[in-house]
Image (cartoon, rainbow, N blue to C red; front, side, top):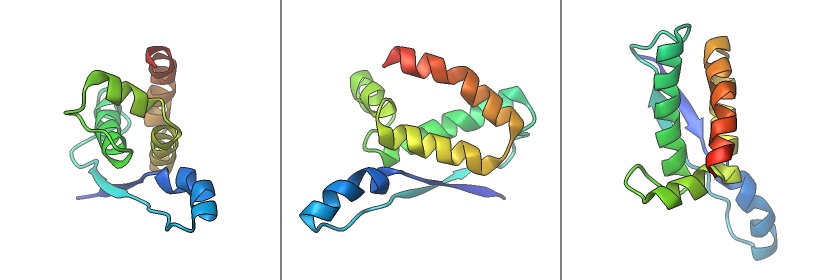
Length: 111
């Protein structure tokens, strides 16, 4: 079984504040399985993006159980955007990249 590691960008965002506050930077990593998915299929690419979305929400402070407004705010955060961008780029899958880019305007419009 192959596992994709999703690393939240929370550390990048916290870094400037941490430099002034002398607080440690925290990075969250969540394993996301791509087992059973054919990443050349648009349908499976969309399924993987749902899995990545859930992981990024969790890593950035929300969850699928959070109220819709909290999820929307989290999806609009730099932490979430960087986490998703990094995870999608690490897959190196043209189909996942295309589906992700296609959905990006909808994400921005909903925030």
